[in-house]
Every structure is written in structure tokens, then in C-alpha cells.
Image (cartoon, rainbow, N blue to C red; front, side):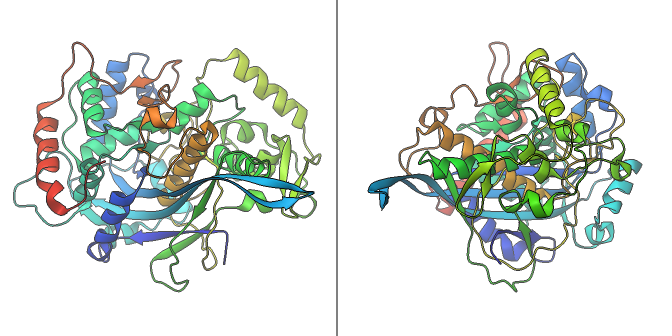
Length: 493
């Protein structure tokens, strides 16, 4: 079947068989998008401390207490950049401006070998959404936290994370401060005591930059909502429109995996493009809270619609029509005017404090029918209150798990990567697939190394400050990675 993203499911049983493919995908990629699932986030109020030093200190504590149970890795490799005139319509040639990618996505089940905490609400929430803890304990790929341990030289996810650093790939995250801290503590080294040292370490670890799509959409786009699923689907519609009008757009393809290949989860990713208001409308008023934030306190008891495709198209001036075109958005049941009005006033009158992010597509793939996702996402929603059941990782410090989309970490990583790719295309400054994916070449100097901070109108800056220096653990580790792993044959970009 077309319209599906193939996601390779990786666990302890097949990790060593898939490791080379994952390392090759990273080495050949233009950029890598990552997403994590966590066993909990602790006290949400502490995660949002006004003082950044205290916020960092508490987040470091939870990174040492809770665990990553799933890592999504999506590798985007630019295969061509086209700017040509093709065909003729009414005597005029059409212009094709596209940036084409081949995408390989992995969902890695991970089990911390150290003791770790699990929040009850998070545990129940994951269970209710199909997460199999028995499979986690039986097949999770084991890892330990903190610094490297002597005698532990077997291939592991730590080696996979080091491959990203070895090849100096740009890292793409969504609302990702918490994710970055968990990744550092879980697969790299003990976190530095001060946020300034952490920022300095990250700048050296990722010399070609870290991009937070939550920050980009909050601070550089005018959008009524910024939770991932909404953003992903909105960008799919925008990408399709840009393709039709001859503007720069993204085209995505996937490796031709056999449809019956074991351990592949086929996830549909073009639902919003296929949505038909005439046949698919549920006839309900739109839930305003869900539309703007990606979650609803009433959960399944809500009498209004949580249909994300309907919501995205309601907030869209035009929508894609599969019959070769666009049409004006049809009127849906619900107070759409009120929603748009609320969203507009909220965007104008409120600092970039409270919104969510997470969604957009535009791809082409083949694959078998999609099955129900097994793992619940953590970047699903953004929460401004503390009643949410945040079980997901990341800096989703405010993203509650009661929200949009029950996808795997792998699919969320794909959505995050696609969102970034469309942002690159919209800038239209990349002229060749061989261009280095640096902030200057992409026209994103104002977007790089800035991580979204919940409740703040400024980002966490990844940089080496005047009075900050890199941590000793990092200096030792990165030297080992770049001196010892480099001979494996892949040149640095």
C-alpha cells in the first residue's frame, strides 16, 4: 500500500542485525531527527521552574531517575534539489522546485539496566494505549546510564548515538530540552552540574547545529497551535499547495522494503491529504481545547470532535483535493470562527508561552496496511496545566499525554524531520543536494541552537558562554569518539 511510512522496529533480538543499517543511514543522512518515550517526568511544576538553573537541576535529577523506553530515529538524506520547467499546460511550462529525500526510520525499544522509576499515571496511560511492558522487559535493548563503563564494549545504542556525533550530523528535535538531557545522561555521559556547561557540550557535540521545530514554529511562524501532530499535518497541506503553485516543496520516498518483511510497522502518513469533509466529517463541534493544544481534560468523554484532520483543515484557508487541485475549505459543524478568533488573539496577546507542536507530512511510500501503534507518544501535546498525564519524554514539559495521536517514537521522529525539511524548503536557499546542511547554507542562522523553553519568551541557547567551559567528561568522550570511530571509513562533513 502507498501512503505509509515504513518504521523498522528494533529490539534486543534484532539490534545487532540492524545496527549496521542504522549506522549507515546516519552516516549517509543530511540530518537526523530524534524522539524519545519516557517512563515519567516527575513534578511538572519543577520542570517549569522560572529559574533556569533550578529547572536544569531538577530535569537532571529526573534523567537519572526515570528511563527512556523507546527511541525514534529518522534519517533524512537529500537525494536531489530540482528547479526545472516540466510539461506544458495551456502553452505554459510548469515549474518544479523540489527538495527530495529518502527517509529511513527506526523505532528502538530500550530497557535501562539500572533501577528506574515509573509514574503510575504514565504506566496506566501507556497500557491503555497498547504499550506492551512485557515486551519491553523481555526484548528491550539494554543500556546503562552515565559515563562509559570499562569492559562494556559490545555494540549498543550508546554506539549508535556516538555515530551521530562522529559524523557531525545536524540534530532535529521537537520541544526537545528534556529529550536532549535524557539522551546525554542515558547514552553519553553524566550530565554536567551547570546548564552553561551542558550548552557548551552540546555546541561541540553537534557542530552543525541542533534545531527545535517547536521553537521554530513558536518564534518564527504565525500559527494558532504548535503541537507536533497539528504542525505536521498543516505542513503537509502547505507543502502540497507549494508543489501545485511551483514553489519550493519537499518530496519524500522510502526504501523499497518488502511488504511482508518482519519487524516493519507501516504507519499511514497522508491522512490529512485524503480527508474528505463530505464523507469523513464526524458531524460534531470541534473541541476548542484540543484544537489549540492537542489535548483535552475530558479525554474520550468529550462530546466534541478530536479529529485532527478535521481540525487542521478547519484552520486552513484551502485544503488539498485529491482530484488534482484545491478547494475552499468547507464549513464544518462547530464554532470555527470562534476557534480562529481565539487562536489569533492568543497568538497576538500571549508571548510564545503556551502552545503545542507536532505534525506535518508529505511523502510517498509503499507498504502493507498499517497496524495499530503500540507505543504512546510523548510529544503529543502541550500542557499549560499540571493535570496532564505526561509520560512522554522530551521537553514536552508541558505536553500532556492526553493528546493527539498515539504514534510511536519512530513516527514522531519522522514527523519532526519532515517538519524541518519543509521549513528548509520554504526558505529556498539550498541549491544542491551536496550543500552542507549548515545554518548559513540553509538560511537558518536565526533558528539554530535555540531550544524551546516552556513558559519563557526566550529559548535555551546552545553556545559556549564567556564564563562557561565544556565538561571534563564530554572532552574525554568526544575525543575518543572522533579519534577512534573515525577510521571506520566515513568521512566527516
